[in-house]
Length: 352
Image (tube, rainbow, N blue to C red; front, side):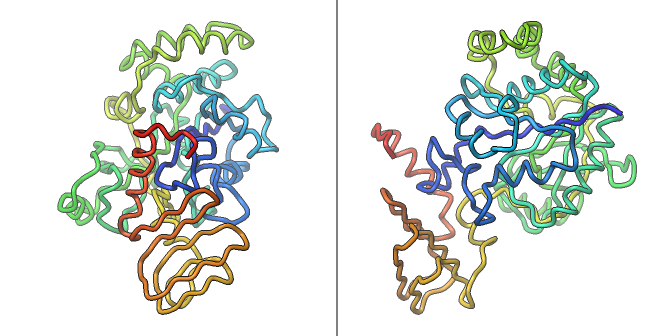
């Protein structure tokens, strides 16, 4: 049997969770779903019994913090990109690492910052996708939609291949509300989870066909001894195309399969998602112990330990207090917190 390696993508910035999330402490390093475990640590823990080893790809800026967040992981298993170049280059680089030892090794690519409610069901879906990838196809997991979501891309299911595995007929960009309602009603569309499964050699062949410039750079890196890889990366990585694996490969290859899943998945796209997953009181508030909530409902409150927060006569708010920043925003507009980050960048405020 080929080896199986999980490749965790952990280079995101998580600007929708500012001010909890910062450039040096982004979303995946926060304990948003479980109070005792970061999203990254949860992702790695969930696959311990499913795959043979784990590689984590992050940025050079976050490498030290990432290793500190995963004390049980071999530090050499954290791969640091010199610069960010979207998902196709980092997945390709990790695939070359797997191919050095086992070209037919199966890679399981997972985002670092998702929440899974039903972990047993999740592992069962992963096992099904891994088995499908062993046959030589590229496989993804699609989430059965529960609402007409405009924030996700979609995958159209085609013919059934085997038990629980289908052809992926096409990928659909994030739709508007009317189109999302149509996709939900059709019953054959799934949310694109960003999880991918493939033999290392299969992905590298697909990159060679559809992204030849990236392939040449990856081949040059892979041809060097492992000890010389950092120098090759520094020289070649900045010139790699900045393109996602979806646009660069997945939308172009012929043999893509999808495994539907329904295991309490959330991509935790912002504070509204965090509120949905949090424990709440009878009025729907998710707040620290000791908070004073008077005639208030359906709000999310985060504050430093020992600091009292009081809400009076408000509903559907997000209140995030940190030692150096405070955000108050209607919950339905919580994703717009990223606009604060954009404004801070525009005025050159690197401190925040």
